[in-house]
Length: 254
Image (cartoon, rainbow, N blue to C red; front, top):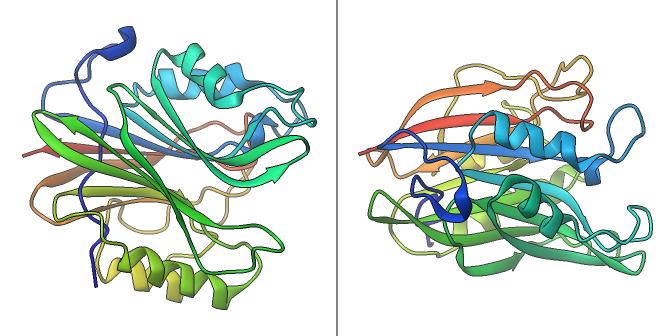
């Protein structure tokens, strides 16, 4: 059974004019952006970009991203977010939707290589679920970053999707996984992942609903132990830009 391999990525070097992070540290943001539609009903990508810039994220793993759909005015949201943040971007398609595509995006301070969409088990007639991975380099070390978004209705599907993520073979190096797991910390899917991946935060960190969060659905995990040392994990105070709050994890790269 392969491990969700090689580690996260994002990086402190200075591609695309973004500010370099502190030497030896890595800042990973996981954010379900709800296609940029906030709790006020307004689609505003600048608010999402402000969150990413404001926390100085090296890598942002984004879920629920539109690409040229009718509901978001045919905007190429991955490209627009890259422009607004000055970061590199790759898009992972889940489904075709409203004349465009719907899926996940990875933004990174340094170039992203070998982006791969890993289709997860579930119900493709409703919505294909994926893990979306890419490689990058930080402090001279190759890393893999992985974003995901598990099924929101079917507990059995979520568990199978978590098992599929654990079984992915992306190499043997360090890795970071971030995403909306649609599962509570004590749930079977999270327990399944934590058998291989390490948590970055102590205790529940509520992320949903954004206005007054009471449930943790969003996570940043890492593996293997000993390469990336989690030094901070917190939920950012952004109640309007999406229906989820973002999670920021900070690592020391050994």
